[in-house]
Amino acid sequence: MEELKIIINQFLIPKSKYEFETISNGFINDTYMVSSNGSPEYILQRINTEVFTNIDSLIHNLDLVLPILKHDEYKTITLVKTNSGNSFIKTNTNHVWRLMTFIKDSLTFNTTTDPKVAFEAGKIIGLFHTILNNFDASRLKDTLPDFHSVSFRYQQFKDALVSAKPANIKNSQKAIDFVNKNIKVLLTIKTNNLPLKVCHNDTKLNNILFSDNNKALCLIDLDTLMKGTFLYDFGDAVRTIANTAAEDEKDLSKINFNNELFKSFVDGLAMYKDFLTINEIEYLSLGVVLMPFLHGIRALTDYLENNKYYKVTYETQNLDRSLSLFSFAQLALDNQKEMKKYVLMKLV
Image (cartoon, rainbow, N blue to C red; front, side, top):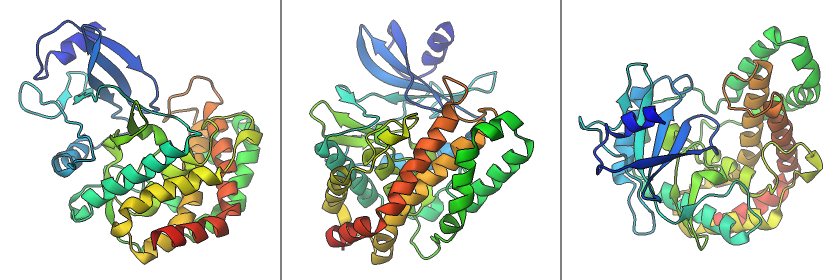
């Protein structure tokens, strides 16, 4: 923790004897709760520069968007300035750190069975997009090029198969078969005719901050903030809200598509539906297939490459993630007709 004490002193905050607690929800960055006299005050993060290789673009996007992400119903998280007036610091070892304000008495959920949580998630995502709807998304830089490109992720997967250990290929044959069976359908999803928007691009449920009475406050973890289509944010949210099982659930019989939670999410989104075009609305149900498939193929590729990207707590965790995500993608395929009918009814 001595390094953390050195880091924290480089930010413009009151002098105090700060304590640090590791937050383990994230798969990418190293995150710490910073407390003073037992009271949480800040979130300190070391950004994974092996994943986010273009730090300057990431900072550019946040510096453009955070100042305008303001609304009476949206809590603002602020990047604390360094002693030299910057938003981030780079150490001599090329580590990149940032410090953010903490919203007290807030919490996150990995999954939910509560329709109110699902409703509030839809509402805050709709508000996020409403606030930013008039911002010119072309001003944002692509910090992670091809982040949601099916063809790009499929090529990465094929490349990984070439060099993967035979044992890894054997262990993941079920997941590999799912990719080969469904890749043609996924490649037919075209987003070229959809408007480019400022997208969060990682709207899983635990990237939404809630109050202690389950009111959604804001979106967090904005490193993936880039231009994109609303298809991405819609599908990513539904994959973690309509499925009450964990993302790496080993018992695939527990993977489910909870129609009540899906409808509650859409009902919440409908509170701020005016930012959506009819073309977007008609595509939304396909986003619920696209996003778990993309996350699944990325996790599978990482497993084949010996877990280079995502943090894992056991060797086959990425394989378990892929199988769980593919199971939900299949359920989303099976529920296309019902989803599209409800989305059109509520959002048009």
